[in-house]
Image (cartoon, rainbow over all chains, first blue to last red; front, side):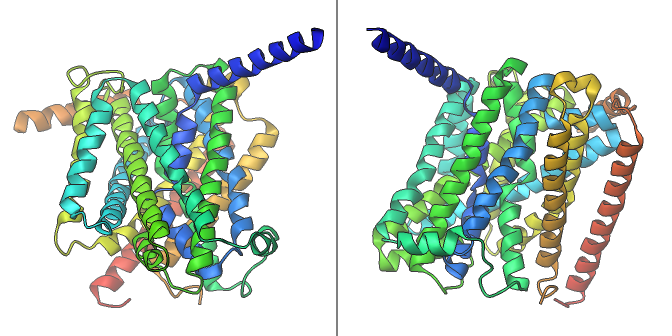
Length: 422
Length: 60
């Protein structure tokens, strides 16, 4: 009897913890899964096609990288109740604030275009004209925000996060060899030796793991959700779970293309889906659906990141808990960025490839700055109190930030000058 | 249109005033980090401008 009562007590305790997590869950999970956006899917698909399973170990290393950077935004948001844009203005003055805000707006808008490029390419495979995809996405995203509740928006976003797992059944359908995956993928190795091309792929994978919009988005989402200091441990757990999930999905994409398309040069995830269609119709279809979902999740987060940041600085009402009448400028900005980015994709002959490359370059001008600001703000004893970075967090976080700054800069430079490492 | 632009510039002026002074303590580490950031960004802008000139000249 005593055993059963203890078991029941433990079950109740675990169940309560799960219930509590489900209330807090959201920002970390959504931002991390959305990290696998259209550009990310292309990078992972190309990595698998180029190097097979050989870089899976490298993807696993990206779990702590993503976690350490993003958990800082949870603490900063929960303690200061401010988004990152406002925190930068307040902490470092108007000069650095405007720099971050304008750069964020530009890079987010360009990234949003690339999400639409991914979504239209994915649905084109099923014969859907681009204008229908763009119109449908804008309508869907309007419905998600116009309910006037953060909770509704977040839960719908989490449904789309679940759809991101479609790559897992796709990987099982191509019958990969588990022995080969473990043999080639888990033991660190550099396929073909260290050369310019491999370096480019490693940098591209890091570049897709941490994007500037993720920092701004998660901190604003933490604030909009109303998370308090006491929620920080759950927020961290949410972020950790998201980090693991995003890398797991990335690994399954690598497994799909590494099994079926090894040795094929892949330029885009849409092209990978088309080629997969030839060998296995369902796997190709899953790849295309996953690409659309990835673009949609990216678009959902990026458009909000910009609107939140502008709302914070201009003093507009800027919460998803407010209706259009209460926060007209917030929603106007949201739809303006969304619709204009969608329209660019529909312009015949628009330089979409150039835009896709340009995103990487512009992101490099914002990411290091945002990361340095983040570390400095997390060390501000007056604001952060007991939640400021510890020495260990500064060492590990500082090392990760320094590595990201160096590698993402080299990646941006290699995008501008493709032959520089050859 | 003119009035709206005027209102926008007034708002930007207000924001500049509100955040005139950086609130974070400007320790040596912070100053050094911001200086590094400034130099880094100037370097990147120079690279982007250089690339733009190459593109205009038709060189890859």
